[in-house]
Image 1 (cartoon, rainbow, N blue to C red):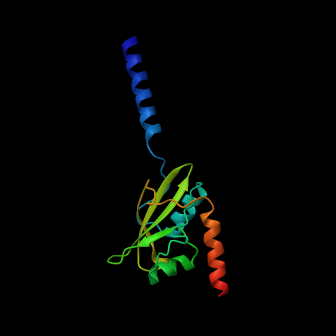
Image 2 (tube, one colour):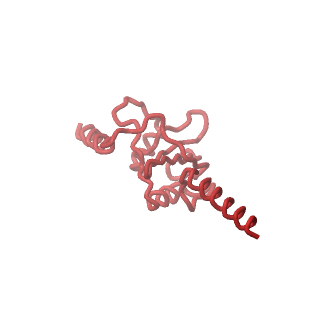
Image 3 (tube, one colour):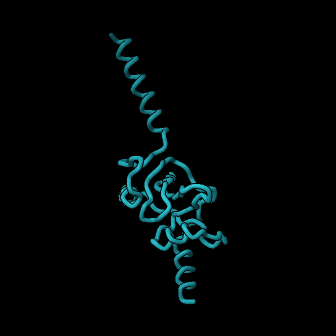
Length: 140
């Protein structure tokens, strides 16, 4: 009986350690869900959009510009040969990548999600710098 209790306790501790070692993913996401709904869900869970390409000279495609026009600064890029785009979020030192399928901003659906950081995470204050640059370019 004591051996069974010890084995069960060891198993629980192993599972707990394994669970704690796993990256934290957003919850409530489903394949094919509307990206706007998915985006609001992860933001509500505390994931913050990671502003991408602030001041790095990246040249956006027409599709990417249409997405940015809707305020989705977390867009990393969209594939040129298929209708996939990648968006990044951060929370408590973890990263989340959402991949979408669709050609128009209004028709984007969730294709996958994973704990993945962009190649180069923006420096603190990048959002503010990005917004300042956007406002300056809008003024002409």
